[in-house]
Length: 315
Image 1 (tube, rainbow, N blue to C red):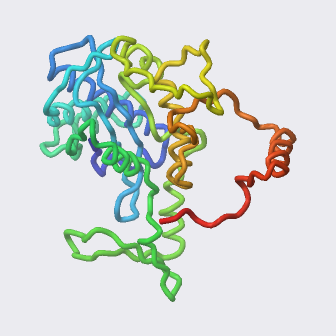
Image 2: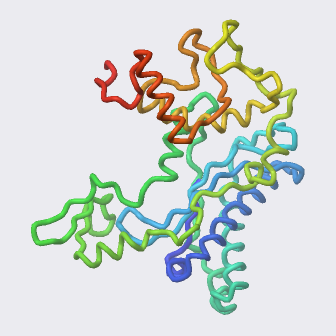
């Protein structure tokens, strides 16, 4: 889901980046209220991942919120109540009321201007619900997640000109019909640096059943959790610790680094090379002296170091 605000309010968020938190919280609270009202339940929460974006397709300042939200509500213990169709209009109206009320309380809007915004027939606020992603579509989830956290400008759309100006390829302008925008050097620097977030400002936030305080309560209980993967009978290089009580949910979270290595080197570091089953991490060695001793020992034993240059993997 994509939630946007009218042009009349965009300058407020550019002058004070702290107000982006109001925008993010208002989007999450509006979606929570809309889904709860649609299902008639207050004892469950949707899971929401919100990404704060401040750029538009034309190199302009355009604060808005992109979200991934569960298609229903999650109760404590992991029980799920599907929704089917999102109440976009109700969420849009609630989003508008929350943003205006909170900006007014923060003394960024006068009460007169707030009343004027609430009286607009075409509010300028919008909520777009994209197509649902089915559980068996991990590729679609990855594409949308990459889109939520993408950079403000793709390098392939930036073309320096001989006169020093910058040409940015854009969607076709509905008014002028142009498919690009040309910036003077200083205007281009301003357009790009405006998108740099404030220090320690998190642009991806988690709400509802996905919030840090609620995540443990709303994930599937032991009876609903998937069975742990089968381990190999033969002793692997990383044996399972029988005292370990870490659940599958935590293990899945810690596999992100392994997925990145597998995508780059086409080798899964958490798969046993002998039996093909899952390994368990028992230690992480960070001492350079110990690492150097291990590599020297491997070299004496005739085992090639993983840091030596080698040919790329076969296609």
